[in-house]
Amino acid sequence: MFPELTAHIRKFATLPEGAEAILADYLEVRAFRKKEFLLKAGQVCNANFFIAKGCCRSFLITEKDSELINHFAIENWWITDYFSLESQRPSEYSIQAIEDTECVVLYRNRQDALFQELPELERYFRIISQKALAAALQRVTYIFMHSGEERYEHFRQSFPEFVQRVPQYMLASYLGFTPEFLSKIRAKRNG
Amino acid sequence: MFPELTAHIRKFATLPEGAEAILADYLEVRAFRKKEFLLKAGQVCNANFFIAKGCCRSFLITEKDSELINHFAIENWWITDYFSLESQRPSEYSIQAIEDTECVVLYRNRQDALFQELPELERYFRIISQKALAAALQRVTYIFMHSGEERYEHFRQSFPEFVQRVPQYMLASYLGFTPEFLSKIRAKRNG
DNA sequence: TCCTTTTCTTGAACTGGTTCAAGAAATCAT
DNA sequence: ATGATTTCTTGAACCAGTTCAAGAAAAGGA
Image (cartoon, rainbow over all chains, first blue to last red; front, side, top):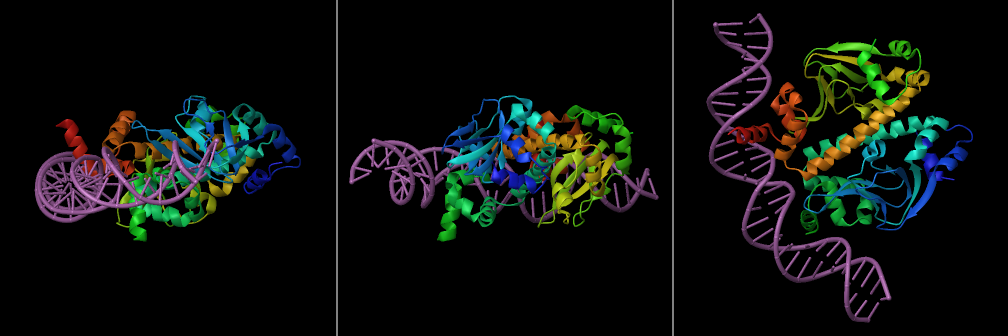
């Protein structure tokens, strides 16, 4: 039913016989068009989204009315606002498809029952959360250790295909500087 | 045996009868003196530390030979390098006691067996990892949205007692600016 | 195809924060 | 107490990155 997802789960946990059938009972597939919202700021986040195909961003609007992207998610990543999801309070973030995107959706109100039927998923989500946590902490370190230009070069070399997929101004926002500055970095490189 | 830890676990998961005895089999208590290292950069991280009393920091040494603190842990927080812990590769970070500290230690080589005996712990660690992840992502957003001065004021108001507990230069490092700059912020406030 | 919207570029003036250096104050060990 | 170490302060010169404004290029829709 969800080949990408079950393959991903099996990297970190062992699924018992019949797990696919149980997953199929609890999960839904949803498609989002480019620019469609998976979650809008102000709403309570009620689901965790696994990207089977496509690409999304999580962002908020700053006081100065500009978008600040805190996260991208591509194939084989989960994206949600865990803070809103667990506290059931309105989210500050919006999650939006950057391309046409297909997701496997785990709704909050089915999560506990699913974990009870398939306790291995607790392990799976524990491990991927810890990995994501380590990555997020490293990101802070990286931001403080390197200049904007270094961050861009590093990102470009780490995800060359991704840099082609998203508009430059979104990359600038994620990397923590202005689109104008990114444009100047690129001019310097190519000149 | 570990009153602070079991109380913390019960906030997020239900422990069965006899759980304390099992925990006592698998966990150890260790004390660290001020400045003692829980983990040194270059070593493989082999444990996860729950702070029952005291305070630690996780940091690395930059190219320019200065310390960069990416994390503080006080009472009721776990601290480790999840990346090194799970991959069993040498850690880039050191973890060091800032005060005399008492920890409950979960060693890596006992973790899987413990989780098998007490599957509720998978849930506990999943939930606290997700919470820590949400906090780490918010931290990046916060860094990009606010000036150094604003970050200091916010931290001071959020953790007034903690600001007293650690040297200013560690705070500056954690907040992502130089000790000199922090000194100037304070001079401005008090002048 | 042509018009509209979205995305990217360039320059000039400016600011938040760094760097370096030197000294003052506080804390620690004996 | 006293000397050694650790932590904090101050100033001047400097630079990475911002802001604002205006236009160019590219992509998208009927």
